[in-house]
Image (cartoon, rainbow, N blue to C red; front, top):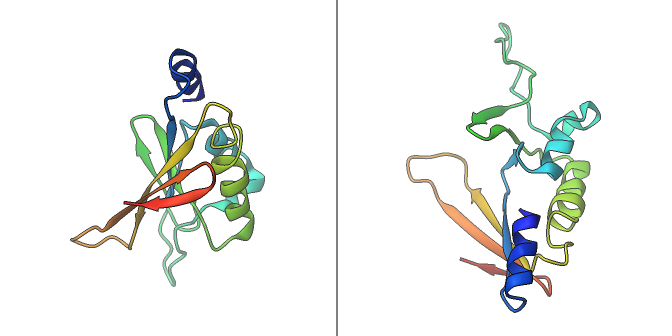
Length: 135
């Protein structure tokens, strides 16, 4: 994504470039998120299937994930301050996010209430200087 942002800026320096980041899911196809997903010391950054009592299922205790065409997706565990810090400092503000000279902002998607028949989506755009615009 950063290479595409660089190409746009080279061709048209005044064009504003935003990148997308999913708030709920860590996406394996994004290098900054894949690094956390593949690091066993960061497994606690992600939610796990509950361990039911008295008969646990095969998934019990494993990281909650779904598979997409592009790779796995893990649910971020925002109750863990280390996960929040990683998401903000590395994914959002890091070299693959708004910390990159070619990126002017970030579209944060998939912020919603727990699943229901009427999914409510709120999307936030984070732009430099750091401010948010809600849509």
